[in-house]
Image 1 (spheres, helix red, strand yellow):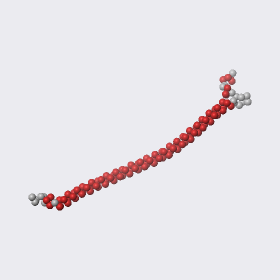
Image 2 (cartoon, one colour):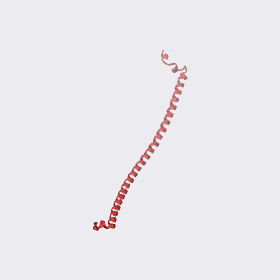
Image 3 (tube, rainbow, N blue to C red):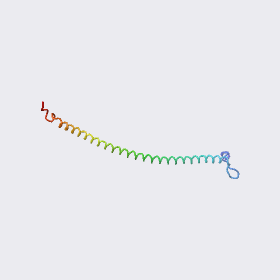
Image 4 (tube, rainbow, N blue to C red):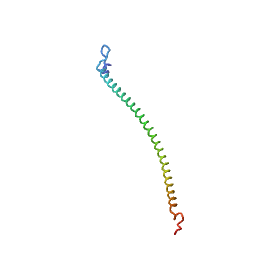
Length: 115
């Protein structure tokens, strides 16, 4: 009666070996799963390698961005300094032009006494 509880595919043959039908199916499925696992492991390794490369590229780009920001800050401060110098020169030019025009116009320098 115990043999009835065991499926037909799981019965052992009289010589003690198992019926090969079920084990062939199991082996085939195991091989398929093993091949899928190997394929997925290779994909995972490939993706991890790509991730490492992309992470390095990202780090390099971030470093370049920080250097660029620093350079922009330097250029901006230099432009502010140059702008201040230009404004000072413009003011000096205006003052010089006013002095020159006062010296060349006698009525301005004498206080308009000719009238």
